[in-house]
Length: 349
Ligand SMILES: [Fe+2]
Image (cartoon, rainbow, N blue to C red; front, side, top):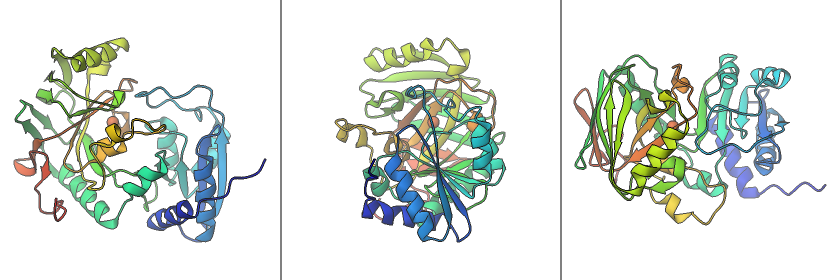
């Protein structure tokens, strides 16, 4: 079977990405894929790695079942000990299989390998491609979250919710990784943490234009979530959106599905809120634009194993909210969906 030619633009961009990841001569870069997925990316990453003097190879595993939308932490590498041991010896694993949130990923990182998830269409990678300034702003957000005791979100729509912080770590995502054992996701652009156990209280009002990522859908009606001691206790609203959210969460028959999960805000000024609407006709579109767009509050429910917690419910809702105010210990970060903190502002935005 003939190997498809490598796209010159893809090769060039992936080489830039590996340079941001500080891939050096003598390092080992492993392209990890499942079945026949992302084969063009795997070839381009391997050639780009070789151009930088690194050793490169491709590790491919079978995929028995397609991944269900919104279901995390289940992947075809589970139990494959020789493959996991091989990945632990890599300098950089390009994860095009979907390790996210799994024990195996934690084990590979703990061995010192950096892990870069790449599962977005090429046009999205180009559009949201990371910069060193994006990294600076995302790392600034991480530092602020690490030092904060309370995060408070309000909106004209009626959101008013407080998170006590300090129990959980903070994760940054800016789209490349040059530190041993560090994970990142190309492309992205936000930092996030999780409220202390039992210490998230208040109301989130989902408004028209906010995004229900699990359904790749924009909310068209108000939904009021009442949150007590870190759990969603009521989902109210007369429109289709409340019905969808209630039905979806109930379907897991798991009380842990109602836990409030990660919280943060978007900082990628090249990500577009309208992406899902504009690309509805395309296959393979995901939600990184929705999660990363500049000034969104990324509210979520479900698992917290990614942050070291023990809730591994497969029911995960990412809900990027527009037009919110967000403060950390009273310091304004966002006002009506605009980034107002001087260290994270982008000129002209
Ligand atoms: Fe999430």
